[in-house]
Image 1 (tube, rainbow, N blue to C red):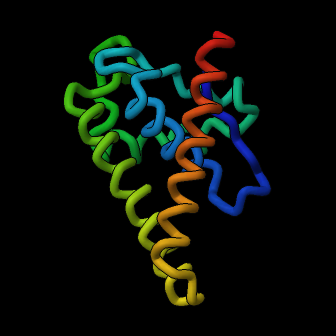
Image 2: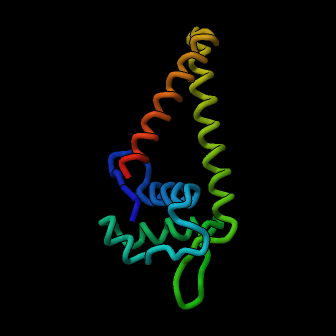
Image 3: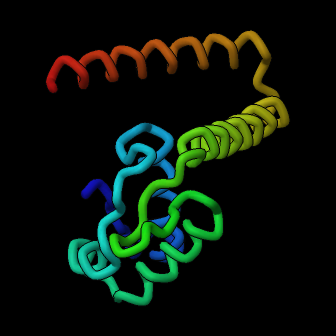
Length: 135
């Protein structure tokens, strides 16, 4: 699949699964209506306990990201893409807000921050374009 579990990350493994599944939905890697791997398949692929994947899937269902399809398993819910994109946007905005607050509190000037942000965005765009060309 597309998930990568890092036991040393500091986040619970089930939480890593939840976050990465939501990210996959938000980016379109896991589109609405697509079936999620079974608990057994994902647990085997990630080399984690079945209960860990089950807990993550229960959370994803409670969050409205996955829905049960009778006789087949779990699929990405219809409104999940929009929901996951909005959640991802809020998360990034919160992180950026925190970083900018810390930078201003540290005495960095607004002009310096804007210059840094512009430079970093340009660098990221260049890397993304290179990555797309490699595919």
